[in-house]
Image 1 (spheres, helix red, strand yellow):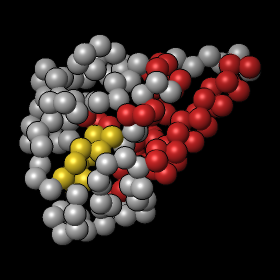
Image 2 (tube, rainbow, N blue to C red):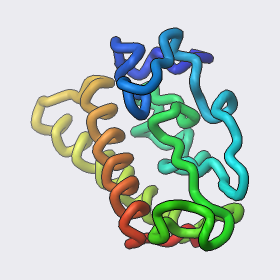
Image 3 (cartoon, one colour):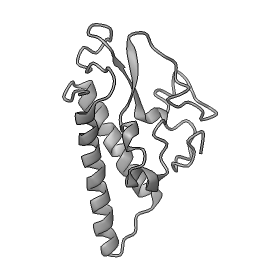
Length: 147
């Protein structure tokens, strides 16, 4: 799914940053098509290294989807939010924290399956959305580092 429509989001406008200022009416905005911003890097909230995780696969989620990308500064003083962590390359500690959250989702889905409740792609997507929201908040508040 090259344009990321398989993630069960039927609204092409459902993931743009602010529908009052712009629309991605064709649903084409992803990591590779987002513009560069000076002194910033595009950060995958759920890291690329986890793109083959069971939860990501079962949701049909495109790891490069715009909802999973956040611009982070590459040096202090270049962003209006001084709490944002500095991003400069890989971050194995951060990646492991996100992986543990995805692993917990896998465990819950397996427990539910043993009780007869089989998760749909939309259930996995809801969990991914929750994880993205959690880490967006942690990053915005400076409560997590990219290390």
